[in-house]
Image (tube, rainbow, N blue to C red; front, side, top):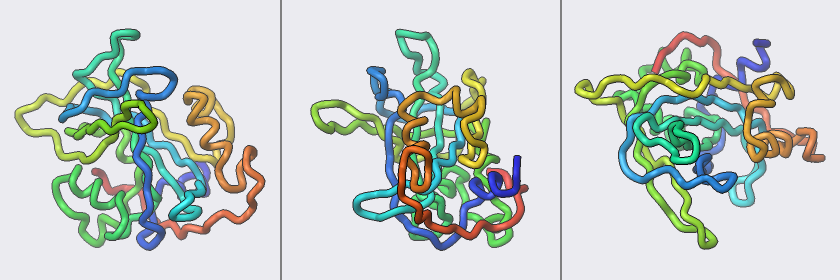
Amino acid sequence: MSKKATEQFQAPEDTSAGYDSLSASSKGGYEPAPSGSHRAICYQVIALGVQDHPTYGPAQKIMLGFELSDELMESTGKPFVISRRFTLSLSEKGALRPFLEAWRGRPFAGDELKRFTLSKLLGAPALITVMHREKNGKVLADITGASPLPKSMPVPTQVNPSVLYATEMGENEAFDGLPEWLQNTIRDRVGGPGNHKKTPVAADAVTGADTDL
């Protein structure tokens, strides 16, 4: 992976705090992921590039995807999958850092924060909370929180292959394996092939990549 691509998974500490939450399982006619607390594995870390937002404006976005190990879809027999999109920032005022610290069960120490990279999340187990909400007559599922898997719970076996993608990789094999709605989101990023805006937001990346969750 190139240095530029790697930097997309290293969250700076001072960018916008805006974020979005979405349910991957509700796309394409799928039933929304069940509400409640679930054993889960993070199987996707997807850099979405600079995405424009009607309220918060343009910002670097990252998407974390989870499979719900104990909840299987009737149509495929595979785990439900659900994702949440964040602004790429480790600011205390943002949404990503509190989410990660709750998942870790402890705050980041100074050195850990500087060395943390989101690619380390792939394959990590979690106990995630899913809540339902209604929008335009449809039930959507949102990830509202994450915590460490209790010691009494065995770590589940991952079913879906891990996916790490940065926009600098182009439309490679990993991109081709993403659902169409997610491909379109990436293409429509600021400065992307589906968007004619040419003013992406710069984000200074911290160095290092060896801090685990």
